[in-house]
Amino acid sequence: MRTRVGIVGAGPAGLVLSHLLAERGVDSVVVETRSRAAIEQTIRAGVLEQGTVELLTAMGVGARASAEGARHEGIELRFGGRGHRIDFTGLTGRAVWLYPQHEVLKDLIAARLAGGADLRFGASDVALRGVTSDEPVISFTDADGTPVELRCDVIAGCDGSSGISRRAIPDDVRTDYFRAYPFGWFGILAEAPPSSKELIYAHSERGFALISTRTPQVQRMYFQCDPGERADDWSDDRIWAELNARVAGDGFSLAEGRIFDRGVIPMRSYVCEPMRHGRLFLAGDAAHVVPPTGAKGLNLAVADVVVLARALEEHFATGSTEPLDAYGPTAARRVWRAQHFSWWMTSMLHTDPAGSPFDLKRQLGELELVTSSTAAATHLAEAYTGWPMG
Ligand code: FAD
Ligand code: DHB
Image (cartoon, rainbow, N blue to C red; front, side, top):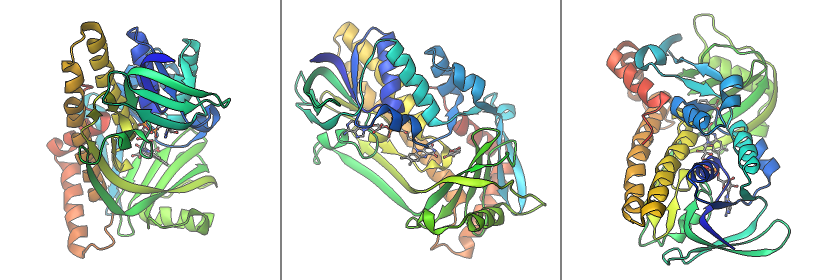
């Protein structure tokens, strides 16, 4: 079997890339280990930058995100027992959308299949060969047990943080930039009405908490926890008490309800460079991971493949290798900005278990600055709503 672009992974990076290539008349095959049902049910990110929604809309898959998602024109930074609004739209003219990642994936998969795309869900034994040759190969076993050799012009490694693509870049070529944080996020979904019109990012002496939303009936909330915490060890009452303690002040309290999903997410920062080796191009979490505090993970994956699709289109149209050479350095510029923003939001809002009273006071000084200086608030608002797509 042959295709121009073999895409490993049907997450946001792989599916958006497959769309953008199809729009440009470039054929691709997507190889994915999980089932379609599993992908469409996995709870992950929730915030779409304005540029991501605009891109989905331009691709013809943004209708549900616009209609069923919620436009948010600001967030609240809560500290010292009080809320302080960052007015994104007032400061930048831009906004974000709350629309869950698995709904984005449903929209992308339905549209790709309607367009006749070749998406191989449930593949196993996926392996890459000859990535520095002119005809790299993805070998895999199809869902029905048939062995497949997919010969490609290029391979896009979009297989997330624990995929195989990154490992096809030899150790002596690859640099792994890594930072682990001494905390994780305890995330819940609850049947409850919203407690706030906008997302709340709360700093407290007990640690960080994030009050987000999914629908008028379902709320998403997180609180900083030990990375080794076991979600099942917590009763609902204890979870609500902890969340309430972290957002307390000026009479505010959370609307509570039945908790029907819970889990602990690790927090890490990671970048693999180069993002390209021979004819293998990494995009999204396969190349980099950010801590979720800046809501950048999904958006960064989309931004990578916008750059990659353009580079591939130009390469196939002209035969020039220049656009391919430019992909990694161009994508990495945004990646490192997003790394900085995600690290900054994380360090400003979380309690370091090994920190001192000085650290706590310094954070409050920083939060005071960000919520009172127009320049500092604009910096946050520009980053959160998303820098222009490359
Ligand atoms: P992924 O979405 O990971 O997609 C990769 C795909 O590749 C997957 O479908 C996987 O099954 C497939 N795959 C893996 N290995 C192979 C293989 N060998 N062969 C073929 N296919 C393979 N970001 C936020 O901003 N906020 C959040 O709250 C948030 N929560 C998260 C919670 C969890 C549990 C995780 C894991 C991530 C979370 N993220 C969050 C990050 C965000 O979801 C990711 O940044 C985003 O999914 C990246 O998209 P991607 O397409 O690069 O990778
Ligand atoms: C959500 C996740 C985030 O990481 C974030 O910064 C904001 C919201 C969410 O899942 O709703």
